[in-house]
Length: 360
Image (cartoon, rainbow, N blue to C red):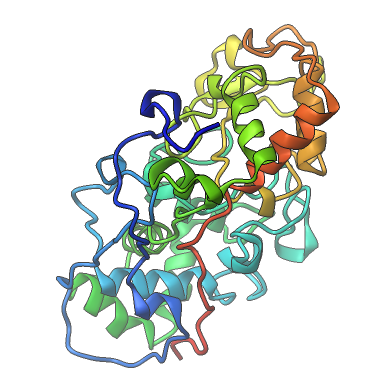
């Protein structure tokens, strides 16, 4: 493959400067010292996107613009284990920075060591998505950010009022909420806005793939990865669901993962009540995919090669299998090269140091 390619053939293909670009938010990339300061809520947060991401695709609600104060507050709330019924679970317990904001487990572990039924999806590049969770039940990132707090197997609060009461009981949070939102009372809505703002700063771009496809750096991908890219675009049929700069159609598909006729996870069906959505789950981004094993909504597939083998045999047959899922008949080399291409989607922009201290 040459270094000059048609942009129509490349997921997310559009002209970009070859200059490396980074997320310039020093407050979020280093440990934070918590202190009270003047009340304000208007310091705009400059979100400089890494190479390969699309500014026009950002999903930022008009009633929750990005500000430094909200992002800094949201980071503290995201990492604070006190925001659970027994003080043992934080958002970061299942979305670990070192694991590309997943937890490396088939299904997540919450309060009292209870196991959930689904794998923790990455929090990276959520700024490009509206519907959240594997089943899309949260229409916004703000709603997703407060949902787990009232799950009996996650943070364990009986309701959002209990969450708000816990936050209010920590005096040091009051001035930080005032800095972020002004002199308004602390509410679950403001908690969600702060955490969502922090999550929107977690980005992945400037990967070897981006340098190859957007900056015309032919040496950024090995020959094997370039061949894997061709398989991705063609015989592998990956582009049917994993397209665009973020490698997802943001839709829901039944692959037959964990399918059981009489029981099992209903997936999107539980949200829409549409029988055709039974067993359908959201297409995840492929960015950082090599860092977010195990795979699928239930974490039942251990490695990238196992994922490719799963698709190669046409998924698991069931009455609601998506018609795009068919046997691929890939060769061993094609599978190996496809894995190498997927590894080239590891990028940068999401490295975050946990806070060194929390409000008291």
